[in-house]
Length: 475
Ligand code: NAD
Image (cartoon, rainbow, N blue to C red; front, side):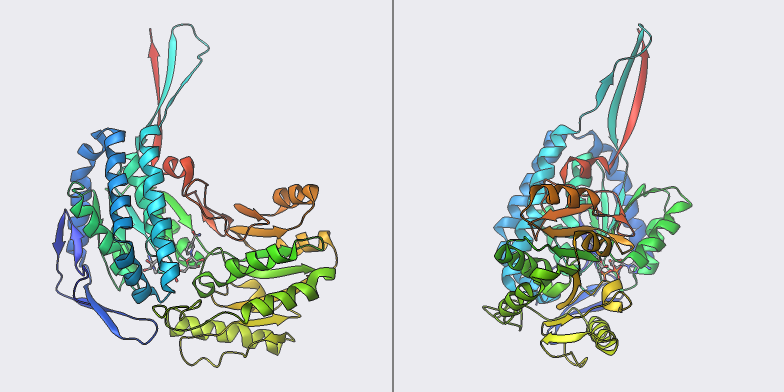
């Protein structure tokens, strides 16, 4: 690909580096681009650019900042086919999912374009007659945004939209597998005339060193990270010395509970979305299916029939539903999880256990899952359906909450009181009731327990990039 941006983007300019790293197509390892590996001096330059641009960006009226975000959203949608093709190329997901991701990503920019006008403060009745209490929201300062490969556009815009709306400047560090989407967005930002230094990008294949440089800088006032829980812990620890604000969107282990009275068609349709989007490589992927006994057999039968319709192949080929996994380590992990489960007594209901060769992993359905199996405890990140039965609703709820993660939980039931009870009792930041896809720009996305800190999207997403300042005035 000769037409993609491939250098660091610092202070409104493309910045080639002395060293480059390769970005490859996960389907066949074909070379897509050689991208600048940002040096520490370039990271320092990006920090300097974001710091210098901050005073004028924060002073730019909210509605004007919002107009930039609206223009960037429009530019994304205008370049939808090109951006989607790039995403399919570097991430491997089916083209139709890439198109959906571009639209989803643009929706965060549109949402925060509006929120930029609504960073409201408050006035508070004081106890003394001559005191006036006002509270205003101020941007936290230059921010570092660290994003994963599984949704390269959306995981960036969820942060970028909120940060820019709040008046913060940013340095984005994309995942080494998928830096091209972030650079394409920087290109669009440049084209719409976003002021230099407001949005900088430092690609790298050495995230520990580059993130360390960002975390070590006093000028960076906030780190927003989306990725694994293991790396999230490192970020939190490293942010402690300088007491930086930290947002962490981490891993999940979502339960997908189907109760005996569920609408079977709706439950299967929801399961297909919740399990197979991005070949299961999603933080909100259904990881543990918990089926109340009377519905277990019909649900499994209908789910297997739906899975039988899925087409697996190269993401750019028409009609493909499942693309390759991102890399060989992911294939090895899924192979290990399936092998461990079968070794401990799981039964293969559909499919063939992966042998660890090739990036295309066909769906596999396992039942007789037990809690000692790794597939039950770990985030699968692949097209593996792990089924377990529950004797009743109490058992289903206990199983659902038996995890250290708490990002999202799904429950299917027709009964309104049961819906309310499960919605309250499920330990997760988000709950889908008769719903397999909860993500939307209007709602607060985020987890509890080991799934993270903070919220993205919604008005709460903006709050994560602002400090409250209380002003006491005597009259
Ligand atoms: P990852 O943690 O390996 O990498 C995420 C980012 O962190 C990348 O940019 C990577 O370069 C960087 N990184 C890696 N090591 C680092 C280090 N030592 N210091 C600083 N940065 C470092 O995760 P991944 O494999 O890219 O993504 C998959 C994970 O992300 C899954 O656990 C998934 O659940 C999670 N995720 C969570 C959400 C959410 O919103 N909660 C969304 C998408 C993905």
